[in-house]
Image 1 (cartoon, rainbow, N blue to C red):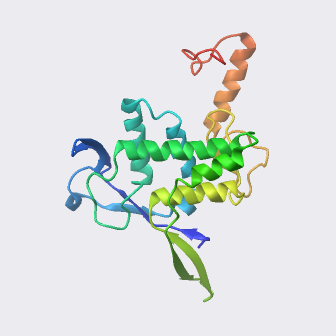
Image 2 (cartoon, rainbow, N blue to C red; image 1 turned 135 degrees about the vertical axis):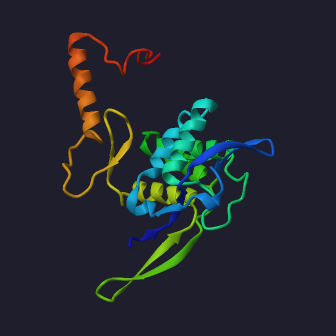
Image 3 (cartoon, rainbow, N blue to C red; image 1 turned 180 degrees about the vertical axis):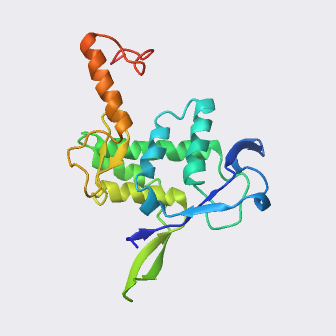
Length: 228
């Protein structure tokens, strides 16, 4: 058990957007009697999930596309709110998802920026977040010794705790040169690794080859020229 633990439930039948009291909300698909929950600890399984939500926050204004991407995030990671309690319809509104994603995107952007005033700006941004609700978790190792950690109940608080661990250097990560997502540098991996996956590595190689011949790759077709 690490310093932080969590148990997040993901509905097996997935989540869909529905109208609840006139608002677009992400709700479980189908009756609860017909499905089950997958439970996982995001601190152990996906320590960089916070960056996935931050990526959504950078392009969350186009609602039709963003609703699909938010639902995809929820189907993989779970709902941001309402963990560990009976489901409350209307809690996961699009506006709430959008606001949280934008706030997290702003925190990541500030941390990675060279802005000389970023400490002050980041402090002001984080002050808009409620404090983490933590409880102590105690576990016994196979050798009989005890280990004590801190349990985080809500996924939204897990993501902010992950951001803090990353910013404090407790999670070693780097941005992929191709897709620009964070990937974890784990023990045994090359410390100078530039790409998150073989797919991104191959895509970058293809792009370099095409750039050398003056031909645009498929991923570049339709993109605006840099700086425009």
